Image (cartoon, rainbow, N blue to C red; front, side, top):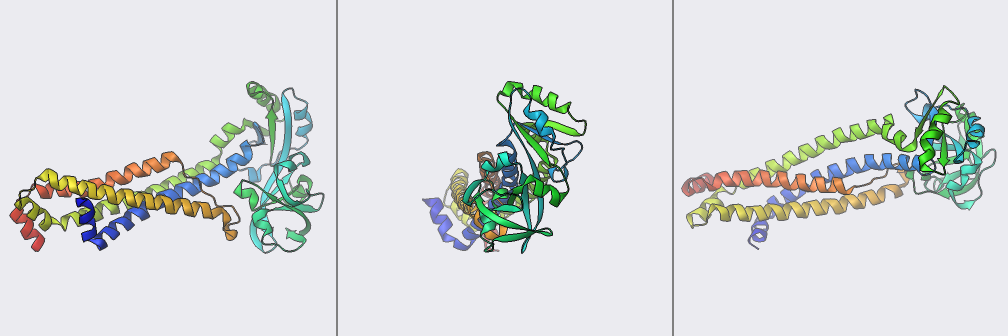
Length: 357
């Protein structure tokens, strides 16, 4: 109760602390969540429909990979292989849209895309992701230097796909001049996957074969995104935390007169530290929860913003939320309790004089 009264006595200072903590917490939440969301979407796209991925050897990005699609016939004959499909992934201007993802796939993978309307594409046709379809009212779209008829609209849980275009792999091959970006293979037994990897690796010296789990773990683009987001979010969060500690320290120092009067009235150092502890705890937790709610609200809105076409998504993990909570409380308490402890040991008369100066 005493802590709440102290906070309400200085509403401007309390609002300043609250805003500083909120902004710092939101910075780490949004930066780390968006980067993890991007990685999570692409990882899910790969891991959902296959146990093994085949790419061109020595290529760091699937956008530049070129794998011979004729390998499918040999792969399908292997024991314990239940299915396989090839895919071309690329990006191109689509109508008035500056850039959008294009997914060329073999016919046996079309069922992955849940049709909202229309039918799956034939030669010279495409289906549009739900987010992209909102921006086209015509029956056809220009992709590259060719016009394709829109045969349907599909929905997907993966933001990349919601804002993209799906077509036959033959049409995508003409657009991007490649056979396949990668091949995904499914097995009927987890224990046989390593053996299948060895057999496929021996089919062509120009390919690299990995389990989808290992591919996602080692994919260079994911590492770049993770490292970049880690550096940016760490710097933003560190600056925010230092700001929190500085603001708390300045506010505590400005209350020296109040502490001096308390000491002159016989209040113990423990009494001052205890009240300040609860003030800081209430303020930090309130700001943290407010930042958490705002961040979750923004992350929920991101997939539905048309101009982003579903390419920006965010996932906030429990470990990140707990880490930010612990760091916020630690820095806020550090910035307030140390100056308060030093002030509480000072002669009350000096504190009152410093406060009045």
